[in-house]
Image (cartoon, rainbow, N blue to C red; front, side):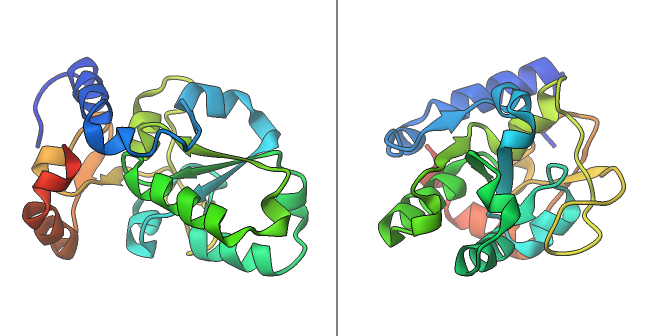
Length: 185
């Protein structure tokens, strides 16, 4: 586990977010955790991580990306009523890639939506005092359930979330992260 106070962990996350990899997605709009929380009912949160990660912890009322894609196939009131769709993953790389993919598909339902990447994603959310609550979803579609005690990270090197959450890794992710450390910076 990465040692240090929450302030040191958050600073380490900021350094990671400033690396060249994330700069590749500069044409994807982003929003901070605090700014996203301030949007209230105008924002729909979409978690693009694996279902296993989603079921460990998620932003309250977020939906999983598979559920979001199902919404795109049908007229959906929740999507209709949201002016902002905010995508997140662990730190923001997969969600930025997802937004770019969505833009290539030209979904008519998204033409009037502001698609944003949650900068620092769920890890930064865990640090923001205004919105630090995460839930352990009781189903794989919508993040409703009891408060979470764990947060997924790719391994010790990526354990940058608030210390109030116990880090959780899944063997397959840990192996993937070990083999691809060069990708992140």
